[in-house]
Image (cartoon, rainbow, N blue to C red; front, top):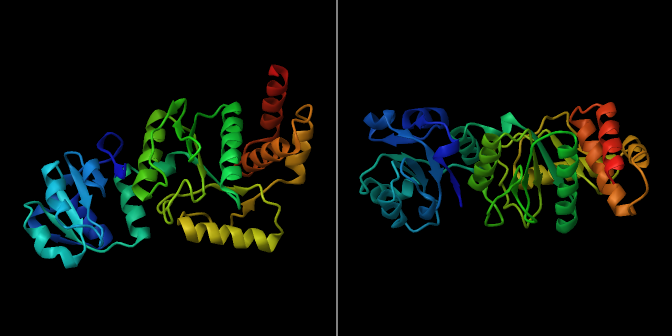
Amino acid sequence: MSVVSESISRRVTLGYIASHYGFKLEPKFSDGVTVTSIADSPDSVRPGALYVLKGDDDPSLLSVAVARGAYAVLVPPSFASQARSVGVPVLFATPDPETMGALASDIAGMPANTMAVFVVCGEDDQETQADVVRLADFLHMLGNPVGIVSRAGSSSLERELEMNYPLGILDVQHTLAVCSEDGAAAMVVSADSETLRPGALEGVSVDVLGSIETLNRAQSVDMLESVRNRYGFIIDEHKRLVSCSEESNWLVGQSGPANGLQAQRRLSLAIAMALDAGVRRSNIRNALRVSKEMQ
């Protein structure tokens, strides 16, 4: 996919992009040109797009992108001659992943800021994806419309999303924006190598990061830093990695007959992450009671 599309974006001018991100714009009088999406694949370009040519791409792709309706292109300075010949305004820069994440989020309307974003990580990709499903189900049980980003199945509320994994920066921003537009109140993301490319969460503000792993304090700090360095998300410096706690384990024990140790641990992690997000214990107990009565 590799696109943040017009239907869920805000319109920004090339002048704003150039001044805000420190890019060079040619010609300068094109500063009022508006772009409505961003794409790094010609197949994803729609009329009004800003097309991003990566340093290892074939510069002939610029003409393809313009033919598909790109209003402007963003290229490394080394491609200046090819870019100037395609007939649309050019932004010159070699943005790092952090800048690209911020730009994609900007054009998408900063969708992560409209939802509570939960990220699950761990040593085992399949377990992490299973933890994501349990957390999403639990947040839904609490009354939240939920979106999911996971190799095991991404969705916006009840609608399945077709994705090509692993996802990059633009894919993630597109999915967040779609879910935000659909009315999702919470987003659950699986931070695993099958789901995300390195740096894919650049520009995403994360509210809760959790893992089912049993870790001591030092190991928790190390895992948080490792996952943040790999995927590039933003998280408050005072936040910690959330795992199963005595309180969440106790609440699981009040929820009814055991469904197996691993199922209990997944539910405990979901409860712990909900508590960290500020959900009241009484609301959690009510949701567990309703779930028990429905079994």
